[in-house]
Length: 270
Figure 1: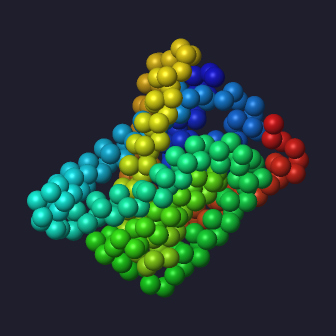
Figure 2: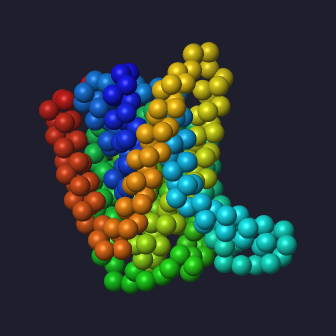
């Protein structure tokens, strides 16, 4: 892989990890449409580390409060809202974490197909549009309970299917449960931290146990670029979501899905 290709892929990963538009739908374009080489395990680790650093940097104050709240409510018998939210994040992480370990990449192997990604990009885009049009989007993140967190976590497990979009499906479920866009997005981003940490740790273990040489320069570059692009994405998305609906992202998903269907029909994908 050339350096400029790695930079483009890192930017794409950083942006699409948190926008509700599906990272796999975008990464399939350069790999299958343009014939770019596979980015490889080391680069996967790099962009996971980069996006994790970005979301942890942006929500650093929230992470401190959640950690303190977790310790107080769990070990010091001092229940509080931050402790409850921390437990909600842990609960919501379990479904995707469990399925990810059980399936161990089999869904990614057998369903990473342009036709599947085109279908899920459109279907879950329309579901996002339906959720965004609900009249009762008024709940704040402080109102989330264990039932709602578990349902959002089950929705997150669907993101194992390429084209679904982890952020898109969790925001969709949160809005279907009545949470406003800001609360849905913030919980989705906080929920990404343990999942990316788990996925990144597993990929790091795979990388360190492989016999192939580790391209450290590519790792540092990929982590840096994906971190910067992901941080910018989170910052502007949370700012804009207060003023805009999800409609622009829905329209984009429909156009992207249609393009992927056209590519399948025309035989563009390698």
